[in-house]
Length: 338
Image (cartoon, rainbow, N blue to C red; front, top):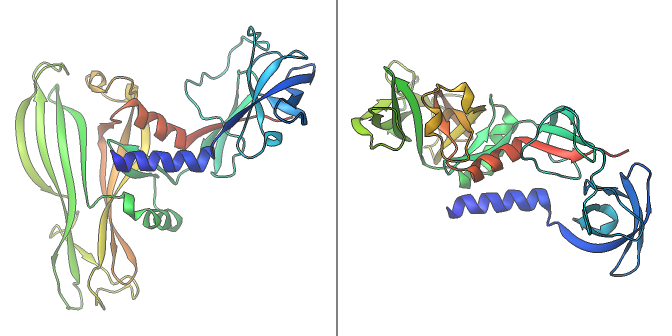
């Protein structure tokens, strides 16, 4: 869990920047309550037109808390003291159960936005891949397809990717729910200097399969099978590792580094899965990943072997923390400023 904690703390520090609070007094309010002038209690400085994100109406003389990352003058009204008096409310719109509020959207690419019925008015921004998420304690790339930029991002974060991946999936066979423990790994089979073969990489998955006799997640499943499956889709079940620098199988050096790259092609709601699987999701978890498994290797430059399609089965998040973190990476919101 130390690796997971390190990743989450690193991402939070990068995005949050350490939010601080300082008390202030309201000295003027706009008619629509979206902005106000405040005087800081600490030093008496006046900040004009600061954004009201408390969701409450303001009154002159009221005590509030200013949240900020760098300076209070670049912050916002986060909390009000006294009885709550919500700004106008009601109506339809989009329901957002959990979202990260940020003040800028410069650290990710916006691919979609919509207005929601929230006070004050808020714009929902959907961040584009590439992004890194966590599923079942596995660090993985959130991306439907590979690009050179994404590959560079993966290499830069190599320390967080595993040499082997352990992940659990669920599926239905003949009306029965099965749980499959998967151990996926890559290794070099042989070395050859011929004109058509170089080092050959093999990827395998060990599958330990259990079945639930009555499809009840509280019952003890029965053991079905423990097997090893070859994953590489070639006639010999091996993939030739290229000399990347020369784009040839005539290798100038041996492979020096290799690691697994789990990749989430998409995140799906459990309602899209077989109804028999939905009770098997952990408490508080409503989403699962559709995965691909790739292998990155270093041989006179970085090369890639893949992709093995693992999207036909369900990989639920291990807990709500993983789900919220991963959804927070791919969906953000920011306040609308006039």
